[in-house]
Length: 157
Image (tube, rainbow, N blue to C red; front, side, top):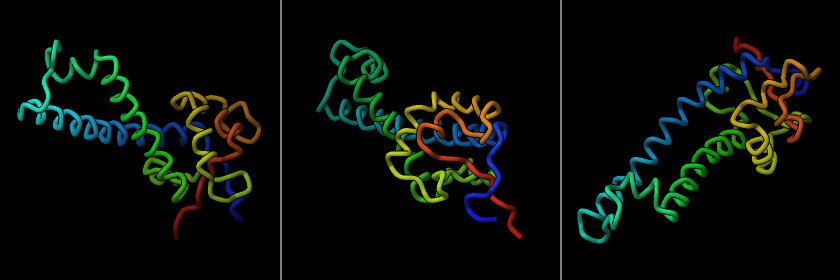
């Protein structure tokens, strides 16, 4: 089979890979959040920074207008970077690798950064995959917009 004639991924396989990736992303986000909290607590402990009117670091990061925006943007960047990193390098996240899936352009080539960002922006956190059973080419909403497809790789010998 050529790269463009590989079978398209079913909804079940897509959601299974997404579940694997969600577990990995949750772990990465927890580590990223822990790093920020550790740095801020160290700054407070050394007297370089204080909580001001906030009770603790959690209260500061949740309720301060600037800190909460920066913190949320930081965590969102890490989440987006996870997908962009894996999709542009190998066309597979770790969850996709476990389920033998690969993301590629509809021409069979690796996807671009622009296609990655379009997929993320139109994926609705994975809900856009619900269009797969209704599309004749088994594409999710994000695949249609980004001109991509998810294919099932053949089993290794």
